[in-house]
Image (cartoon, rainbow, N blue to C red):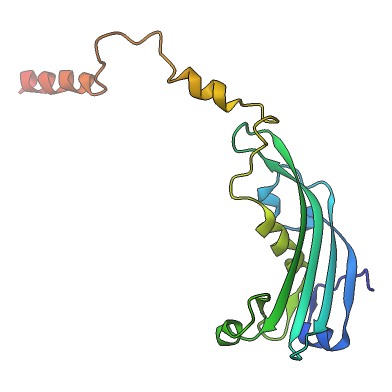
Length: 180
């Protein structure tokens, strides 16, 4: 197993050689993931195993473990999400080849025979982030039953008479008639 991850590599060649990369990458070095996090402290442990499957198809096994700091969409506090994902990706040259893959394999489109290996790790982490992360109701600073019972907030300065936002413009209109 290799711990030094190259920036770019030919995945077909790596599969033919049976290379395995095992290591850690700082979350701060994953620029597409960073905007989804409240903190980029920490690192992601990964294993990238390149192999040829029974059909002699180049396949990449991607395993990633990390502890991500996300923002709870209910209370806006920090939420710690443990991520432990595993994917099996078949290297394909185009959409036609991707359609012929078995259901247990996802396509990995590679153009010009080059692949940024770090992007495989980052993609798996991005896919693991929920669309709207929230704490469990018991752990959240915002109690939904209390919020739902409270009803709409009442404005103490509101009077019984409705205020019209364009009432001041009516005065301008009457002033312009008097000046003509």
